[in-house]
Length: 416
Ligand code: SDX
Image (cartoon, rainbow, N blue to C red; front, side, top):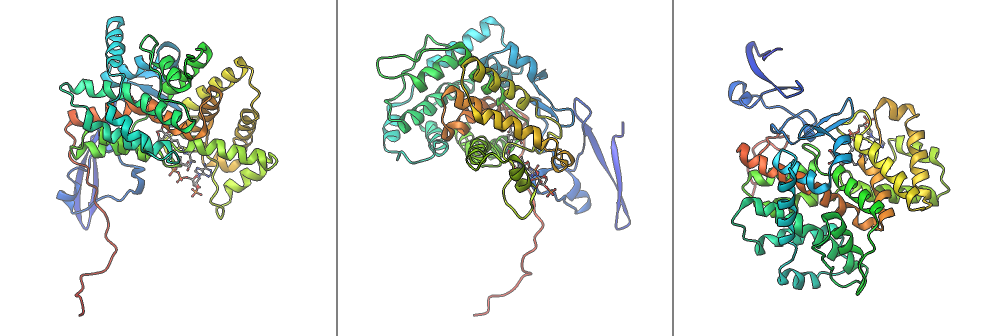
């Protein structure tokens, strides 16, 4: 394996070291490039740039594989709960029975919000988007949580974010604050907090609990995606965990990122309402003059199927079949996927369905409305964001501060 790359610039010869990852993915280490050559690299969107070394998750975009701490997502989804997965992603190993019990129990001890948060929440106008509410309240949490142990900060967030999400949903639908049931497991309590009504607990359904568990697991981590890199960048400036996570939520909200799950369902509804002419919409997506894109399709890393989309499609089919729901949106999504994957445009550009293509169908079957979809994505991604913030601290990554190529005015004087 080559350990250096050689190149010549203006008659000078340079060598740069090559570093290798676990699966032998290679990187040219340019950390001394400018010092040695006066050159910087240019890579908008970091499409070819590794910003750190990480051991949390790994994506093989060509094969369509995803590992969490080395375990394939296909094994985790069938053998672990979301809380076990959160422990794995945060700590690097699956918990034994005692560790899982202690982790779950400790989260429950933080299962409450400071009364000031509830007062602040009461003054938030109901028309605010839930992602804006969640991000703002997560930032404010910092004020009310003074942790002695760093580990407790992660558990506070795992406990409190679902409460904030449930509060936000219940305010939107005119329900009183959530009832928290410490006797329920994490996912069942999440459903209780969302859907219980005064004097009547939510009627737990294992089909729904299983689907929610799975969709949270599918979102738990995904290397240096836009929102995770945002969390790392803020952490590198020594910004606190809660503020860094709050910023990650704002990045996730973008339509091209986590906001896509809501955009997919809105797109499918538009296609249905306009007569369901799939071929017309696929042509629209291919038309460079038309800003429309097939939401839920394409990915920066996957140039094969997103393994999470394959699993999410099965979860969507199961929950709809087991609950006896007739959902024309699922049928339309499957037809759209089939047609697009036979179209040379999508085949040549290697555009496949990503996690967001089917996730909204699952949320809707559970009873979660579109405007809460990205909030659910954030609840799933929380362990990944926290693990990367923690890893960045332990790696002692330097403050993130990219360079640029300046193309503005030459130096000039004010004429007055
Ligand atoms: C997530 O990074 C992650 O890991 C993210 C995520 C995670 O778990 O954190 O996986 C979650 O964000 C999934 C992606 C959700 N977003 C969408 O579904 C929105 C629709 N998809 C696209 O906007 C796009 O595919 C991106 C944003 C996902 C990826 O963008 P890239 O890598 O910058 O690719 P690109 O925009 O340069 O597209 C390459 C080509 C272009 O055509 P040309 O200019 O080469 O002719 O493919 C075309 C694009 O026009 N293209 C699409 C398309 N996606 C890409 N054409 C039509 N429909 C699409 N969806």
